[in-house]
Image (spheres, helix red, strand yellow):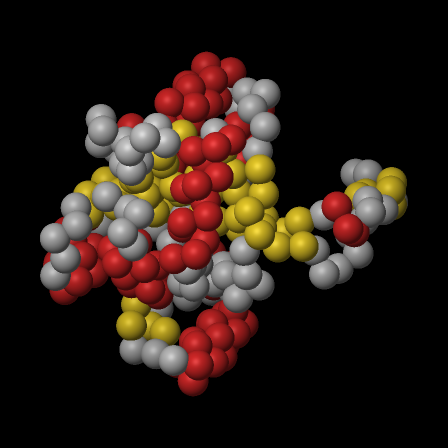
Length: 237
């Protein structure tokens, strides 16, 4: 794979219900400085020279509005394919992975609710996935974390210098990720991210250090935080 530029497919899950946002509107349509939240990450992947195609996974029955109101206005020549998601994030990403091009070498999965992914994260993730097979973006944990039992008694305190807050993109060689999804389906595994999926099949996962600004917009308070990050980014330009 190193002798040629890899074909990179991005799977962008945008099919979640976003219940913690407490909004009747799909959170990925919530405007951030007048622009729907999902458009920020879409634009980064469209403009990235590393990325050859984007698979946008949307809620069932929502392909037409996403196509006409989100994708078409972007006016890009880069292929953006829309498919319907499933009940869980795992199902939605699995649907996206099934839809990637047969030319795909590297699959990058990124949460649609993380608007501040950067080109550096993309480039570093692709390079690491080529080298090691699979990687995740993460930042060192700032907080002391406790592991508890079911009754909420503290079991142990893991060393903070070895703890990471994991984000996306999460990236893997296409063949490896496809095999991981096949294993998950066969064994009825329930995972929360692609890194965990690779771990379940015994594959090592490398951490690529990201940025604390690469937040996931999940609650109403996160919109305000995202607005402040966006403001700072614009001031720095």
